[in-house]
Length: 183
Figure 1 (cartoon, rainbow, N blue to C red):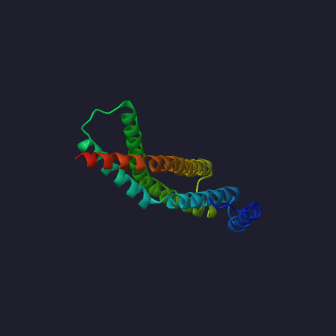
Figure 2: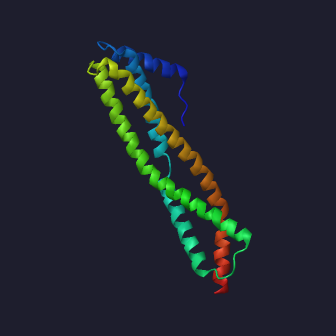
Figure 3: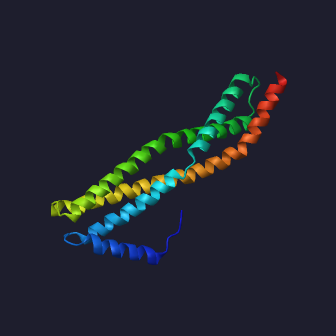
């Protein structure tokens, strides 16, 4: 994640506060929405930084390797071999999970962006009922922060599983070569 200087952030928010609060009853809420939009933009950038092609390639290779071993390994598995293949299968499941979650998170982030834009507009033009402002702001705050945590968790898990995949794959390839040599 790219580091942004504190003076820049403070200056940006003060500028946004002054520009956006003119005529609105909700200047603090508008600044809060702008802050959430900034967090959302960072989260979207982090999600887009995930290399989907790498995940798809590794996923396909693992799936093919597991299928080959299941079809062609006729000996009884040792406990060590079973644990090893179990770890490899868990990496496959992790990549599958990332592939499924990615699209959902992408849609959630787009939806949150639209919601924040709409909320900001409504706050600027005093369209929202006073009783509802706090509720709407709280809901959007929770949604953006929940999605940011989900993307960060995905990145952490993905990094760990890519490292495990890179560690296990050479051993799997050697096993496949030894199976082929016996055929």
